Image (cartoon, rainbow, N blue to C red):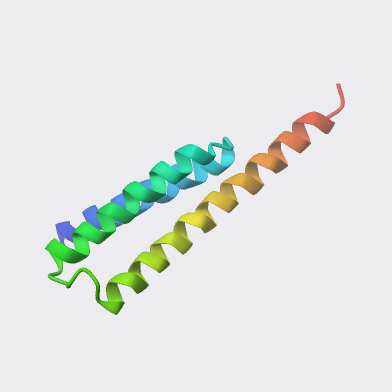
Length: 93
């Protein structure tokens, strides 16, 4: 694996963790900020790193996929947070 791929995978993992944390902590404004930052980085990588045209169909498809990944990570974090809050509220003293 080359270094560029390792860096890109690391950024994706960090982005997914940030999206999941926003869901866990119910930080909706933070999620919007994380989502927009990730989409901007993805768009910049496709335009300058891969040489794609800004309004090509593959660019839009990649942005849609990235948005789907972020929403899934957010929802997993939200469900995990809801589950832990429910279990903490219902544990016997």
